[in-house]
Image (tube, rainbow, N blue to C red; front, side, top):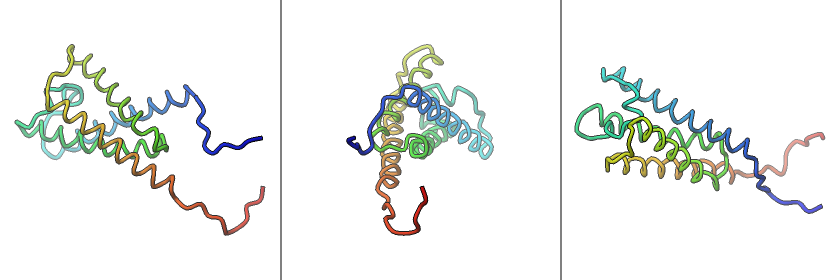
Length: 155
């Protein structure tokens, strides 16, 4: 009987459910952030703000607020990675998967591939922020001290 520390097991159902959970959290928090900023500023919020690459711009107040919500959503996504995935090694995989699904849905919504440079830069920044902050949070949890002394646990 050989023991292996943290053996990785291929579990497609677990991975798929984690992807669905991360994606759901991604759109829920993005929508909630857009609604909160809309309540404070009076800007209309619709699917255009979530999926259109034309909504990401610095030319007007609505575009700037969409960019701010996009960055804050990446930070919220890192918390989602920490709570759902809980593994530092998998943060990059789940971050990229989340934004690739967003790219696919954005392309379907717009009927074309996103061509805006600002959208691409913001998406790359979002993946980076979500991954790095998620790794930081997961690593902090993984490196917590394991208590060796204390009350005995009955088995």
